[in-house]
Amino acid sequence: MGNTLKKLSFDLPVHIKQLSVGRLFLLLVAFYCLKAVYHHLWKDYHHRRALKYAKQHFAEMERVYSSLDLLDVPSDKQRQIISSTVQQLTQGLNEGVWTSHELVSVFIKRLYTLGRPRGYIISQNFSQA
Image (cartoon, rainbow, N blue to C red):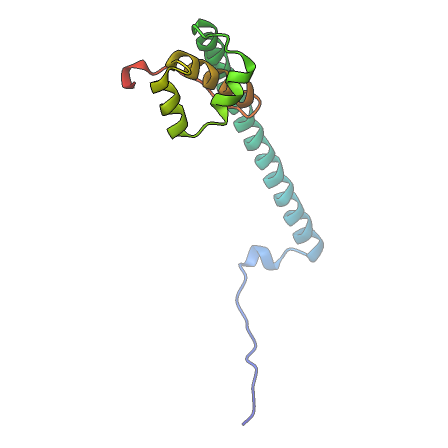
């Protein structure tokens, strides 16, 4: 049983057949450069758009954060609240160890200080609360 290889052939359009190898190479390089420039401009456009969006939201977050009436909770109580489970937080509320205002103040301050470098945004949504 002989294994015969079939020669693959396809017809190129006449205008491509007439190009020399050097010209075809230059055409491919030019296409690649145009594609790279287009990709760079597209990324730059989206980056600038994302920065504008982030600046708007950070300005809104600053406005919301400054308008909140947050309590100054002592640091030992803050550590206790942050390290508590949901059951412990509920138990502490029921026993009067801390108030809901203290809980909200601690967690909003924590979200603000830890979330800002990561791009997290605080927003008020009292209608769904």
